[in-house]
Image 1 (tube, rainbow, N blue to C red):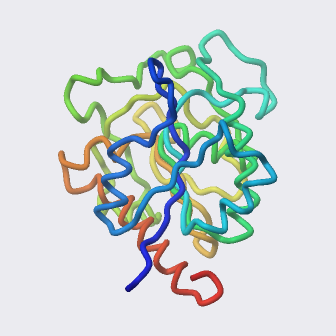
Image 2: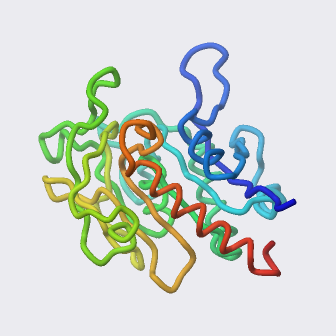
Length: 245
């Protein structure tokens, strides 16, 4: 029997009892629908020296949403608009990157995941979109599933995945990419002009990051599963290489 792909996911932390770490149901649903299984990467327990042992058990990693990245990690002071920071999570995620890149594991970033990937590669962030752009990109969670369009750049991997240059998305973030890290390729923009998605070099390991939450709208349109499907295709291609599988 073919082994199921094991996908490491950086978790959220509940803000009320029992205050545990958890993987969003939509991410679990997407990965399992595509034949994989998830593994929670517990930043509260994992130490840096244990990450190698963790990574060798994985076939891909999803950097999920969550709180803001510590601005000191990209050379800035914390501004009033910057929100909650969990430095232990920041540290674990940033320590993961050299290991993931060394192994060439496929990577998918969602919302905060998009931001921390950019920081890991040397980029910076807008600490508060309303302060900088005078617009809110945080929709009501009990409202319509999609709140605005993003403009996808033709010819990018994301364009090939989605098959559109205009995509309706949800939006629950107040930070975004300011300076994109060297080597990353922007592939989607908000109407205000800031980056809503990026990808890795075509000749490198699979890397895709988006600011919206496709896991939330899996049952609302046919496009939301597509980033996960492309990621899982890359995971299976990675597993097919004898020294990896």
